Image (cartoon, rainbow, N blue to C red; front, side, top):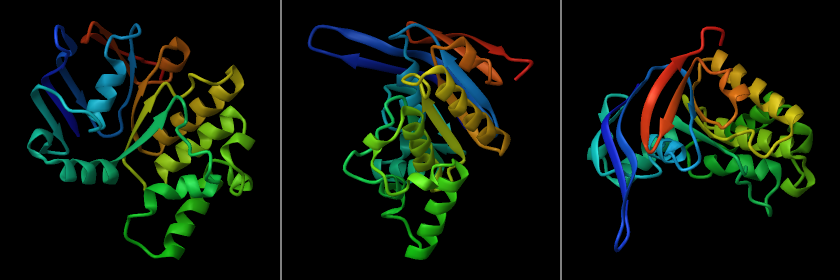
Length: 227
């Protein structure tokens, strides 16, 4: 499904060149649930952004569903991303001026389909995440856990196969963190492929395998036999 081979990403300033990703080799199969751990600045979020086609790289190969991504232009990459990948962020990234319903609707605005079909998708995913009773509320009227559920609903509304989660429980208390983890593990059981960046050993214990990174490189990948 996803294959990275000897992938390198560097950041350059006038005087300094920093290697953010150092010869990454990674294979993600359909239905995998992979955690990514490591100290701050080790390249976890950069790796997630490259896999999500939000960021480019300097050398190496990235094959996504048998397509070599480096050969795709920005329009083609955007089309791939919007069709197949959903994102869940630590800070929710909701728009304060829009209601819950409108935030979840955003990914569908420029997609094909009738208004009634889109309405059904939005209502279905809000109900699935038990946030439908808050559809007309604004983000600032919600708890952190509710805001993250809205963000997950927005990621799911266009039915992507792959979910990329960057510290999805990072801003939540323990009770809300567990709710979000239960949702994410439930989505994995339904067949979603998930890659989750986390600092939490507890969160990582829910993954099938965990990649550990240091200084832009993958140092090991450990299987979780109980996940």
